[in-house]
Amino acid sequence: MANGSETAKLTIGDKVIDLPIMKPSVGPDVVDIRKLYAQGDVFTYDPGFTSTASCSSTITYIDGDVGELLYRGYAIEELAEKSHFLECCYLLLYGELPSAADLEDFESRVTRHTMIHEQMHNFFRGFRRDSHPMAIMTGVVGAMSAFYHDSTDVNDAWQREVAAIRMIAKMPTIAAMAYKYSVGQPFVYPKNSLDYSGNFLHMCFAVPAEEYVVDPILSRAMDRIMMLHADHEQNASTSTVRLAGSSGANPFACVAAGIACLWGPAHGGANQACLEMLGEIGTVDRIPEFIARAKDKDDPFKLMGFGHRVYKNFDPRAKVMKQSADEVLGLLGIEDNETLKIAKELERIALEDEYFVSKKLYPNVDFYSGIILEAMGFPTSMFTPIFAMSRTVGWISQWKEMISDPEQKIGRPRQRYTGAPRREYSEIENR
Image (tube, rainbow, N blue to C red; front, side, top):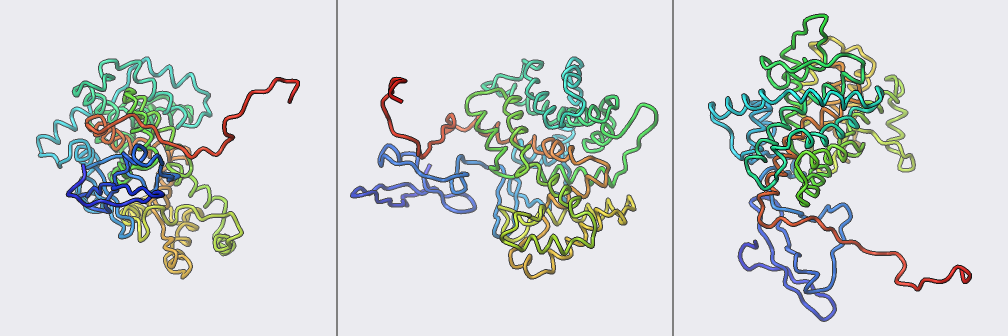
């Protein structure tokens, strides 16, 4: 609904159309064009929807010019310092930080739902052993609707709540099982005595033959990775979840659609692409060659993990991630690793070289998260599944908000048609 009577005037030929201007709580004004087609017989053209607000939301706010990311109004840096992932989940889902009793209840509900239906193990074994974990996760998450019939009615508030808890709880188990399957090791069941991030590390790296003790520094680093990736406004995968949900599809199908979208290297695969780039560089002495290529406009090579489409100043998540990277590398004592040497030198250059500074090509969150995950022992194929696991709470929060929005309609973008106009069908002999 527009605030006040301020309008924008659009002139089309000899017709002037008044378009209401909507005021946000923070950020740029929004021109309401919902009646533009009916009044002006025109569409707007906005490839990538970079200038289009597809919904109203109270969950996440980004100001790319100043490098600000807020979850429900709280700065991500402050949350990363003082909070933890499940408390952040509660905030995103319900809009406020929990009381001690609310948090205890929420953590208990999540913990009790971490196991998956035993029959779902058969889904994993139906995939080839060398399948990408994201392919497995897309299939398994989509199949959850076949097992949890009591949480697929999107019109039932309680079923929506149960579905949300189930997906937050079970996604680490599914991601860990996808990893275990890919390396030929037995599945490790969740342990209720461990916290959320520690439980995930245990399911990934424990084996039945010996005890695995979760290091608190690694657990904290994983918790931060998840927290920093929990939500990021109306990005490609979140918009996909909302678009799928607008049709009334069940929440498991919607999140599976989000996982499929996240798989793309331009989105969730960015930190994997970053590590692959470091591998391509190979040694520190080759860095000048690749720096020169990055500066060459005619060379298609790009430095992955530097700069960000949204953040024009700095990525606020990168500062927190850099601290975790230093802690993890110090703990593991692997500063002499060649890939990490390359990463450190690239980081130094990006922060000092005038070309990178002027273009604001600073190391972003993908650069540091990739380094941390590799140092922990994860293969690059697991980077995006970990992103999907982290982003699940954001997807579910956005989906729940969309379902409750009285202005919500099924998504139906328009197009600018550039094909042939109507033409007559001709018989074969005349062709």
